Image (cartoon, rainbow, N blue to C red; front, side):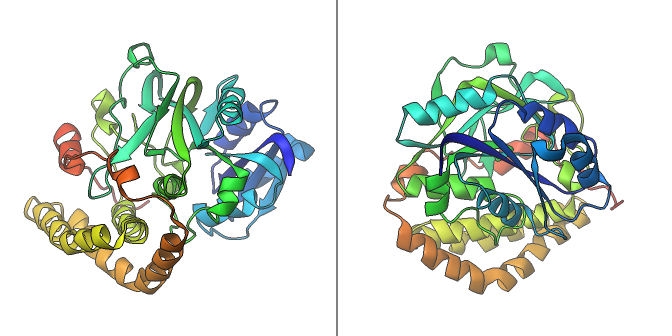
Length: 353
């Protein structure tokens, strides 16, 4: 293993020219850049190879294998001590990597760190710092949407999870956790790996003096205007997709069932179906039929994945060394999805392009 070295893993899927700014921002900050291409057809891989040549390593997966599997492939192809998973629609500000690496080198109890993530459309606005979830697995961050100048003062702030667009993890811990859950194709994989890091006895923190800028959702073929978690930031209505809704709900179920202890997992399963059916009914009776159908499609995904999810659960539970209380005390006690809808309105679902 390369001691005190950091490798950046960037996954690309038809990311276009945005990849260039991303990789450019990492040059000189990391010791190695590994670009994993998930079968792009827009010429972006060739564009990257022409621009950066031997200054980065390239792995062509040949098809879209999902974010988790691609990240794992890139991570296990390097021998650096620290792994920085960095989205191809993000740009690292100067000194970001050094600030993150300094924290993990000085604090052996910390396993995962992340910078303050700024909204690329309005860089004076915080997109996210450290996040948590509610009892249903819906994410929330109290600092989302505030101006950088108004961000509370802290050096390091423990977080239940940090956004995966810029996440640094010790390579030894990543190996211990067997990387990202490859059963999660896209969405929620950052929550899951941070959760398992806590259960393994490591701490997850947000670093106040490290920054990056992030667009968000470009891999899904549309652009989130404003913060991902507060999309109405500039008075624009939240735009999502049926794929994202069904994918989010199914991934959340998998993660909750796999990571909670027996008692808490049973309680979650008992209330999950009624709550999801109520949300589907609410969407239907307010005329959002595509959203209602997306909720119902979630059950098909869950049933199809259930055997693998149960295998995943056995693996996670066999490795845990911390009780649920270590993480659940960081969770929000509110119903954050409802609070989100009240704040931003019901999302629009445009027709597929």
